[in-house]
Image (cartoon, rainbow, N blue to C red; front, side, top):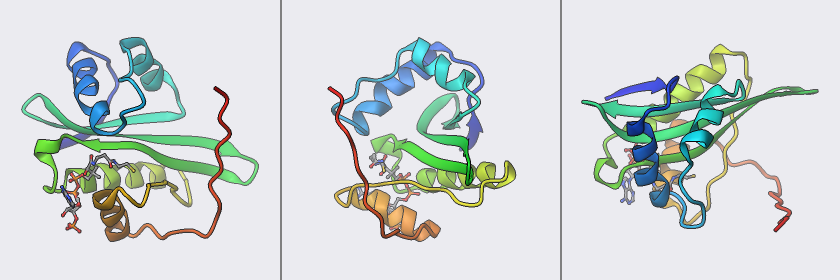
Length: 142
Ligand SMILES: CC(C)(COP(=O)(O)OP(=O)(O)OC[C@H]1O[C@@H](n2cnc3c(N)ncnc32)[C@H](O)[C@@H]1OP(=O)(O)O)[C@@H](O)C(=O)NCCC(=O)NCCS
């Protein structure tokens, strides 16, 4: 299994996200080709995928942005195909993201995960993520 940053958007990538995103979110449609291109083109987003024999088994997006207090890094949209779970793909994707964040000078990496996502929470804690005491707010603009 190879983990790498996507630099080109092709049909296989579009199809992979059509397959993977419903396994992550029932409320958000998969990204279009143009939306995937925007992610790949942006210096703020690193789109990582896990691939074996030309098949994409998982993905994660590392978000990097500078604010007055430093370079912030967030891990978002972690998903591994149901058939490939429990084999360390999620771990490898996260480790690759942490390596990248470290390499570009981020001091910390944040993420959120609902408690009901048991496999994800186990994985993050096993990797060394620590729960923070903070309130997460969301303003709904719709
Ligand atoms: C979370 C997720 C990315 C993990 O991917 P993965 O490739 O299975 O990850 P790993 O194999 O590296 O580790 C998964 C951990 O979850 C456990 N796990 C795997 N499948 C599981 C399942 N069906 N139920 C419960 N735990 C499971 C594994 O045992 C492992 O924990 P352990 O080693 O401490 O026992 C994957 O389960 C997934 O895509 N889930 C749906 C989307 C999601 O919740 N994304 C996270 C958003 S915050």
